[in-house]
Image 1 (spheres, helix red, strand yellow):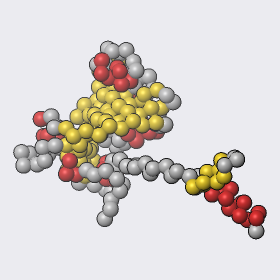
Image 2: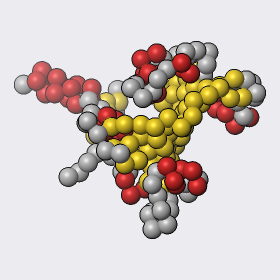
Image 3: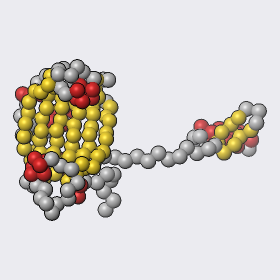
Image 4: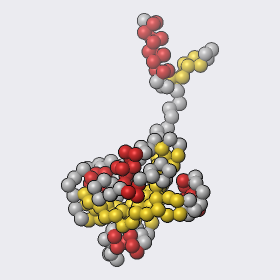
Length: 193
């Protein structure tokens, strides 16, 4: 019937399959190209769900913001910022080096926490949940200290993957993290197995 056909055309137009132009007619709409999306999985989140997770806190301190950090946080250079360096382990094997810088205005008690039982990320998610994230993926050569702490030797992969992550909470930068992974232990997207 005419009403059924009209309703079907309207539903297809609502789904952006057809485009209706008054006075000209109904046409097949140009389909928007599919936008690739890649989920960045944090291997530490996966390991935390098992009994094999542990971590080593290498440093936990207040520092003066370098010009680069000040720019990332939109604060004055030289202002106070908190810093933690942790190595995450899976069954005593290092899987990630994490350096996180924290806005002390948003998380004033950050330095008083014991990160042996609760990870910095879990604490920060509880205190200042992020409502926006920026990610950057880099191939990097580990520093000598990172190489030692991640258990990389001369025969191991020389390249690591580094994810830089900036978290925003209510339009204010709450944290900036550098997550370094041995390249042979990291992948992007879902596990296809």
